[in-house]
Image (cartoon, rainbow, N blue to C red; front, top):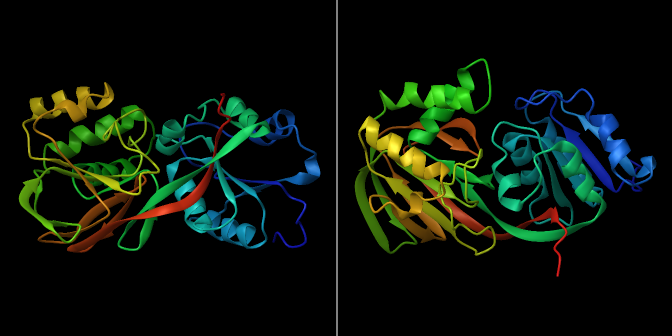
Amino acid sequence: MLANETAIQFLFIINPISGTTRKHNITELIYSTLKKKKKKVKIVLTRYAGHATEIAKEAAAQGIPNIISVGGDGTMNEIASSLLHTKSNLGIIPMGSGNGLARHLGIPLEPKKAIHLLNNFDIKTIDSGMINSIPFFCTAGIGLDAHVTKVFDELPTRGLKTYIKAFIKTIRSYKGDPLTILLDDTKEIKETYLISTFANANQYGNNAFIAPTASLSDQQLNLVLIKPVSFLGAIDKIIKLFSKKINQDPEIEYHFFKKLDIQRPTEGPAHIDGEPLMLGKHITVACVPNALQVIIPAQTT
């Protein structure tokens, strides 16, 4: 599909149905904002789940230097998964519901500003995570956040209000799972946890900072563990989550790791960069150092 187009410098992959932002004028906005000759820019719309992965894989194989995700964290994950350990750079025009990785990287949420930064940008090499051999770049999890993501995905609308609705519905029924966790083959933890999150970036999205001090390039991941709490206790932690103070809560456990193994009693929901899926009883999570090159705003000296 992209054959004989080696002059392309920027390939924009647009998910037309992600998030809450309409994309009817995004093509015109790209051409009017990006100061490149039109022949060096190509725009492709995805048509089905997994299509972005296919497009990005082919583009990276052809050596297209900058492959831009236009959508949410799910679209970003599809594209980034195809760019691991390649010479192609991932760019993000954040137009999804949460936009967690874009927020961490300081990419503007306004589409025109995000496109404009492509006129003058820097490159940063970041780590990725891997959960049961599936890449993630922002966060993954198997606890309450995974159950909420599953409910959220089944609701007809998107956005923060819908996510809050899904959270309230879920926390009334889900009380956590007994887990056996082995960290870096040395430390074992046995406890029932409401939330078990694996964070590469500092937030889920929407400025919900689950790991406020997380680094994308420290060659390790953050494990965040929260034991079951009352409804009021959960509200308190949500306030801390959005005020970037949850890591100051003495009831929350934080661990750094390169690899961990988790055993849980039954298979159940998980989420990977905000997208729901089912995983089995045994889960392995690992950090993949220096996995991806991403476009970030130009750094001033």
